[in-house]
Length: 639
Image 1 (tube, one colour):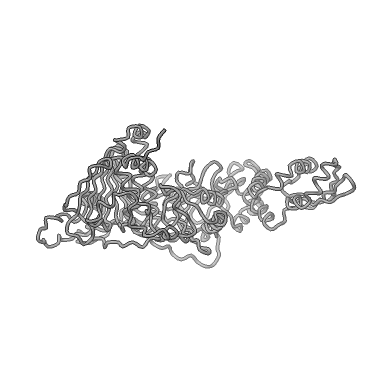
Image 2: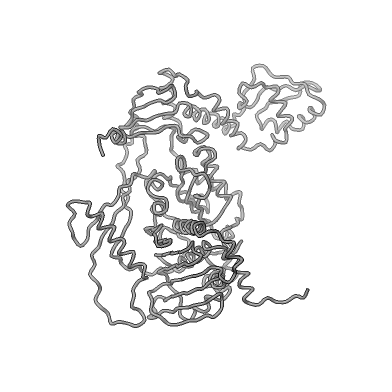
């Protein structure tokens, strides 16, 4: 079969298959371009799951008229000047494949106006062919419209899922980009309905609020720690926020959304006893590393990365993530209970007189994208509706209207994901309507350690009822005791006291093969917690065993260890932890066990003093608090 060179159209379609897999990959590429262009506001609109129609509008720096055609050439980019820069990538895009790949498999219309230019440019291209360019009037920034994805590749189009499924993937992509760039206001519209609209105020907690809502935003735990050349900052959700899949884990490396198994393992290791078995923690975490320590040029979609030293990175990430849970106790009552700031949503309405009319220019009749006008009208309607519910609010030109009070999040401040790009940002124009979140710091807690509580009793011989700080606290006695046992045993293990001496040494007779095996592995057995020494030609004496064996029959347990020396040699902390969890559960008081008043008091004191998560080792909650306000609502004393 003769060898021949493929034509440009075929090459373009093959290359497009690596970058453009489905509508969500198109959205990702276009949003990355907008962010690299310095945009402070991005609107993404789709119809039919993004297969039929997609529009991405930004207020970035735009493209110079003379470079519009060049932007659709293969491997044309403004973000990479030399091969040496591949070791120091500070932008989200750099390969120069996105625009030509998208244009080769769809109908594309791009309108752009560079900052300082009086006119803009509109470009149309169909399937990579028949490129047309004309001068038009448009706002500063870029609007990219794509229609009929894969219209010229029916086989590829047939492999797309239903519009609802593809639209869900687009929503997930937008959400990740939104949380990875909280300093950019992102609006996402699907089939005419606004799904997300972030504030763009640089606070990650507010971006999470826009994606997941009030309850999740207020309960996620903040982390912001650095070690060496690595910094980890963001939010982690455990306990009741744990999910059935890992779909709600969003990782960013230097602001770039990535899939990273090493970071996933680090997160789940830190949160192992804080989520119920079978569930996964959620997060929005940005890892900042020197660009030279991570290779983002692994795959055309840029979702996969590699590290120079993945093991060291993971271990450091675990230590930094663990700082999010420092200072927690199994039980915190009264003044000891952490008080986080209250967060309110505030709408500031500004009645701004229209600017003086300027001489009309044929090239620039519109100051902002068409969707900005619709957004203004939508916000005004919402704000007016909220104002009608309030009494005594003057109809002045400038006023603040509290629209919703949000209970305090679990940490005192939100962490902005640190910027890693240095791109010029145009000065945003003042908008008639501004919506933001406001954080109100709590009153400083007294330095004096004080815990006021009263034990009411034990319900059903299972739940300890405690009155503290105008709340009814219910404690699961089994979960609490199991957590205390687990912490005690883990402290022994970490302190190197993993063995317990036997009052009467155990003498074991072995076969010649077993004896040789033991002699060759005395150090391995010692590391596992056994104290073993030869006691004759075919006998050994065992004077200490791992404490995790408890009161088990030691002889068969030791013989099992000899029979699995390879397993003992490669025993990991995970295996030891699982055994300790099982022992903690078996030795803990059970639901239904009757505890005396002194035992209840002792259990509560230990819970107050022990620094550990308020969950059992399997992730179940140890306690639940029912505030007085909720009780009064239950009995209709208040509304």
